[in-house]
Image (tube, rainbow, N blue to C red; front, side, top):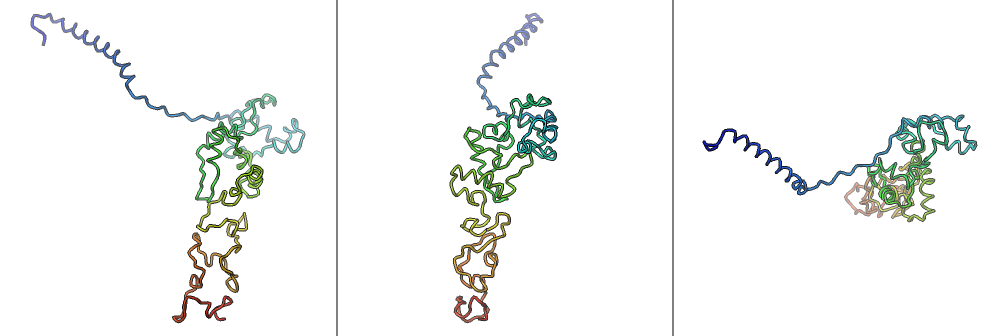
Length: 295
């Protein structure tokens, strides 16, 4: 309430003064408040792979055409390596386009210009961090549903830190070109085992257990019982704690050893046989032979 002897227009001056003070106060305090506020840590932005499928049609036109390639390549072996099955361009990786991973220059029919800056193997450890790892940076080391253990963790660490480690394609092959070496153990031998032996990889990595997680609790190497790299169920009685003779020699492993936990047997008759009479004890061999119960 203003004093009665003050002019009425005085309230306008007071309001203007308060407005100026508020603006000045805000201008002074705003930088101070900003400086005192905690700074949030910025969320890191993942690198992006330049999607260049639309720039890859000239590459595809040439590399899926034998006659076109023959104009530039005379060697048949090299021609076979450079030719791409047209069906492969529609695969998951093929749809990314040649230039996306191999770089070079897209949208040109000039062969020399198209191959400037070309990366022949984008999965090489020197290039994989800029290509493969952008999408596949969180691949698992253990894949229990497939009973597989892989060295992904070590390889990814090596790629990120610049170690000289194997390329992704050493195991997975040129994925956009239809080759799948991991589809068979023969492919593994060519891409992994031979290299591991040459590089003196620890012997345990060359066994089945170097890649496979046993689905049961028996402490034996896979190859002790499994004799086929194509069919797991193809097994053999290579090692057994007791000699299996007579009718026992005709038994399959799983007749006595129940999956998935094969242990728990004491290797006595009563493990598998229930005594049909009350006399005698658990040592059936006192009266019976392995040739048959009646003998």
